[in-house]
Length: 146
Length: 82
Image (cartoon, rainbow over the protein chains, first blue to last red):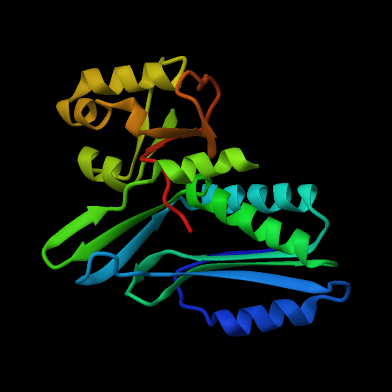
């Protein structure tokens, strides 16, 4: 398990290759990358605030729950905080398992819980307006799938 | 003494990220009532608890959770990670 919370940018391709190279007993690696998207047009920056300490604990708990539920060889979570721009990579998860079904399901699970159970808050700056991104009821509903 | 932390718009509305308090509140809800009675900016931030979440010692918990012996209570809006 490798969990990183950082303000510096990272190369998702390099992280994925390193994660894959570390696996001795996996036949499948699945990854997801989240990117800053300019939904309404004119987004100049996104500020991500987090709760140091609780963030790491929450991510570890989510990763441990995934490891307990599926037959996984390894889990990687990297999440940025601080100031980001459109097209910047916000976060990534990767899962490794013997067969692809476990890796796919676990990556999906990790993302659902990361959305509404990891203490991050996004603030978008568009022109003169600055708005906190509201959580979506779909994100809370998605947890009921598991 | 207990550390009380505020994040995102709760932090902005109250005007500070963290404070240390002496409180006799038994639960998070009691602490909210105590703070809301203190100043308008707290009452405004805590006006709609359905729009807020709380954590005791870095664990997400319901508002009726006991804070006896807790070191840290945090208030924040629903999380938007990923």
